[in-house]
Image (cartoon, rainbow, N blue to C red; front, side, top):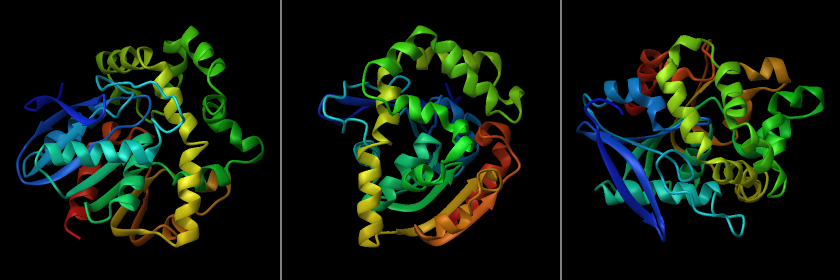
Length: 289
């Protein structure tokens, strides 16, 4: 748990309750975790921000201690659905407007929340992703092998769950090891907590990824066609994927955000754990815009 934070169980939709750690006082900011993690990934950043902000760190639906509804129609884990969860969570905790930061999968939820709820999300930070539509468009040729898990979990229900469920610690642990620039940033007890949480959530994690190859792409395409963009101040912290995969990440992001600060960083993927002071610095600068 995050020291000094209270634990809450908050209903956000029919039959869906989110677990959230909440601490601090002041202007609210919601922090959304990535894969293969839980809200615990924000433990350092959240403790710092809580000095002068109300900090809300939920487990996304399908992850950690939050509910994991069965996806019967392909929309239960749409980022639009998950973004609505976040808005409902903040409202239930007394906040009609809030800043929002997301890492990895949480960043995709944050982007969708910013597009769907521009009058609610005041500031937006994205850590180490591209918007869903751009992500798929830059993945091509042998370089796409870096995202093999995206293609695996995009397959119809059945085989991905069976394969991952047969060796969940090996699967999820592979990414914790591969993507960490500083392995010591994720100590053994935290790594064990992540693996334990993922082991219990294989179907919902796969459903989350499957949605990003289906309904999430449809929603992004509709926004692109309509010229819908993020209107709030946006900060993007991102590894230099573009040099390896052959694209201009800042240019892709400028197409989505009218007020953008794009920052290439030297840290590994788990930057909130590897370089929390730098992440806090950028989040505070964003909140001051």
